[in-house]
Image 1 (cartoon, rainbow, N blue to C red):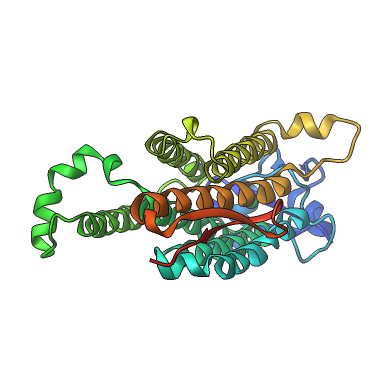
Image 2 (image 1 turned 45 degrees about the horizontal axis):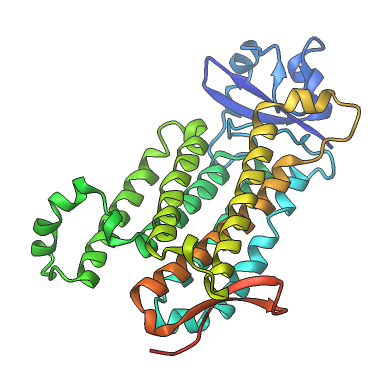
Length: 339
Ligand SMILES: [Zn+2]
């Protein structure tokens, strides 16, 4: 059974009704476009007749974000079937990553496990969101992504890249907290600042949820700035030894996955009607985005954690290895010498 939804301008409410009731509720002149999760033209009469249908953030269809996949096409229980089940890799890769990076978390920084845990929450939130298209699902998904980015910044931002505005009150901040101006205490202060920023951004995401995706995309820029810094710091471009060449290869692979993922997301979000006009089944670009962005995020975390270990604990001789085969598979940071 299919559902359709209606935005009631005068009540600022959105609700879903079963497709077979659409005609009864909305009249024969209303057409459900399926892909855009909306009925055109919008009617305001209906809201006056049935104000009890006003929705909450947990109701289906309360998110105003639109994806190109048709709604309830495969099963009546899941709004976007492919967008929902393409999140399954989020439940498989992070636990495996936690297993593979066990030595790293013992020898360098156990905080990496927070990133793996948050990636599972991203998958769960995204699955819930696409299955229901509820506002609560959208926010859980986006909050988890905000915290993944912020945890990554807290763990792997080199001290040289700490913002200058932050450095001005860093001395005051460390004094209040009883910290010393050592490298490790500067990072502790920076982590607390990033934590406060994450709380603030989580709150701000409630103001205008439709724009949240663009805020999340803006976080890619500082992530790339960190990678660029590490590239120069380790003089990776000049290195010819196989250990650093492996890192360069993985960094380039990660960027390629990121570009491919963004292309899929933009096409799904902005060029949906063009794709639907083609005489081929829709290639489910948002579902592909889920898989590509997970690979890009994971490989970027591996590159950043290698660079962090190499910079902070060079005696650990970190190197990138692959599982289950030495030449290909899932990359991880192997700690050669336990410091
Ligand atoms: Zn999604």
